[in-house]
Length: 337
Image (cartoon, rainbow, N blue to C red; front, side):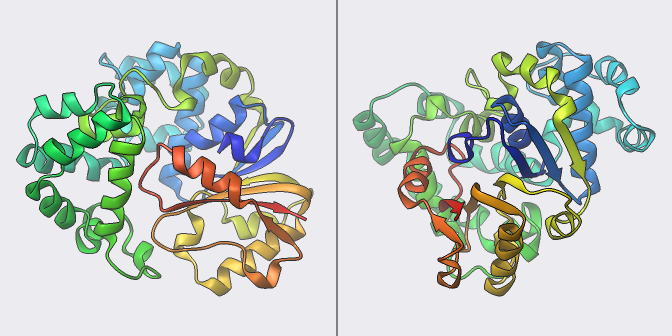
């Protein structure tokens, strides 16, 4: 995302989610980051992260998040003075979330926790998982995948657990699948093989988290110690706007220079996707970058907008190949003409 948007000196609009990508843009030198997020739970999560950056050490931050062990409620109390009353009330209402680590309690996180604790043990023992995550050459990873990992049991349970029905029950909002065609599990299985063979599992924090419950030695960009002080010192550059992106753009008093659109188009029809892209274009100057992921629904700039937005195919494909967030099917990078 950072390489795609080149955020240094840019005013970035960022889909909020839980905040990681937005904080990464800040760490990479964005002049401003406007976070658009209308889910109150996600907003509360982002605000608690901001308070944690302000009040805690890096080690304490990871503990409160759930990455390292320790007493979390005293750390949460240290964040209290930095939280507005509404956000304090939200987290005070869910003390169990603080006990577990507030970075572990999202719906998709719970889905992977269920996979890790209940499904994966039926397929592979801990010893084999540990072996998967050890450094290997490309040839060794291919051999291990074929001989040890890609068993009939793995393929069967994977296709059941990551089916449209089960994922809709436990992992994603069923509306996520409105525009999806074909087998969900088969596409995810293909991308998982890419992560286990073409990429190095020992270097992938997201794969580590899914399989073990922690990120391992390689933390995601926004959580790394070398970025902690930069984020802490620049939190004044973040604005949280609890409105849909369309409404934010409608009331914007300035243009923006970069857009992290996450996988927002997964939930949109072709017509609404084009409408949003045209809206973005009208609030952007030439050279503005757009980056977003496709997971199961193919979306990109339509041909009808070829004079307004240029696709950066080579850059997108190169970055997609090495993307450690491996569940996606494409990474789209585009530029305003």
